[in-house]
Length: 316
Ligand code: BDR
Ligand code: CA
Image 1 (spheres, rainbow, N blue to C red):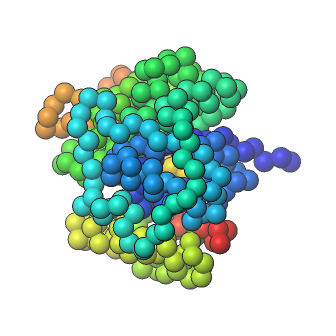
Image 2 (cartoon, rainbow, N blue to C red):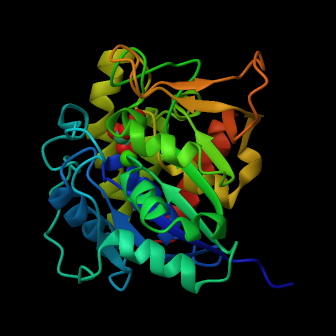
């Protein structure tokens, strides 16, 4: 039987946890065809995320991956970044060599539009791991592509965990709430990995040592990223390690039964200064608003790390 290979476009703002997501995807060519990777401003400004995306592709041994630079600022707001979590470069931790692979000339938004128009309708899944600026811009510029997207599987938002960048909002949604609103109202089937899930996949010591024990460059770098990244969350939450937010998106594509959630209505707060970027998730079904997202709530964390470690082990 031929295995169905899913076509994906990853939209990202690396970020150490984004790096894990990209490595997981690039290590899984039998399951995922990565048509391209779009960089967006988020954790750090666009020049850094564009550089970092290429560093990660080279680390994965995939320098022919198409990488595109996208939007440098949110639709209507000033960029908010997260160097306090990820360090100045966004990939602080191990020393990385500067990338030499090509950056595509085309703008990420044009790539999204062109690819969705070219590929068969319903055959391309979008995987946003950062603010939704590139995706929303493409939807506004070319509304004809919206109905052609198979699914959007994204990391963003929270219900039970509420917020991480403000008391009410998760970082990716907070940075560009207007973009998030466009995506959540688009009608494209959405799968959402909120903090409620990602805060359950923690880089415990044993899990980080399992990366290191792979004995490869990828294993060592992954362990050192986790070592760097975890200091922030351990100090903040008193947790055993850092949440690996973004690889939840790719893990879902590879092994959806690791996750469970509910089909619910999710709306984005764009007006209130106090709760800007909040994902108002009707988890308890207290409104009649129609469901627009499969909003995840739990994850098999050991299964997630088994998958991640096994796939990282496929990279040299
Ligand atoms: C999200 O924000 C970023 O800091 C991470 O890369 C992740 O995408 C978590 O709130
Ligand atoms: Ca991210």
